[in-house]
Image 1: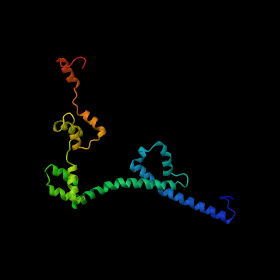
Image 2: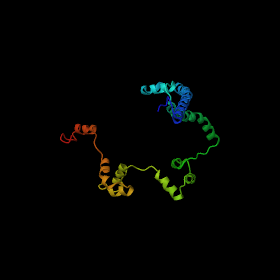
Image 3: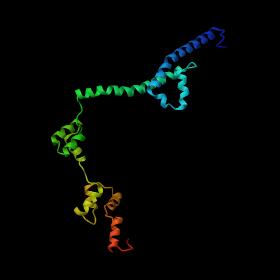
Image 4: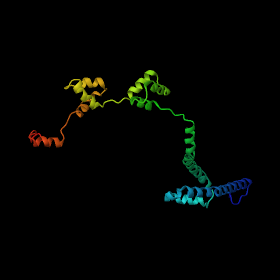
Length: 215
């Protein structure tokens, strides 16, 4: 059996089918080749193309064998989609600007409203309206607002607890103001200790307030 020299009808049908497929591939290659060349030239892709890919694209631009249309088709689809997304977004941007300017639909969100209310730029009832836009009930709105208020850091709370609570044991008062992990309290407490800097120690040493051993 030989496709080049068919004997039976089945061989002849096979040869005709292969020839038709080859002709179809060659016609597709002739259609795709200039499109790929245009994409490479106008998009700047060829300038940054890795050397390992240049032989493949050279074959796609000037095909020497059939069946490269199966590679050219997805490549054209991939590049046109990518370029279309980038270029289409830029082309549509002025239209989007004009549409948003002519039909404004955005509202101040609850975070912005809370910030403006804290700064006395918005009254509380107006904040409640904007919080309601996002689905907060009156109770949830109040708690949401409170959650955005500035709050002292853990070291600041422990330091204040030495004055507002027990100076020697600030833990109970600090824990009543913030949920400090019990295992980490000693670390946070240590961070509140005042420590001499090297410059301060030198000054104390020069004034004979700090001994050589302590220094």
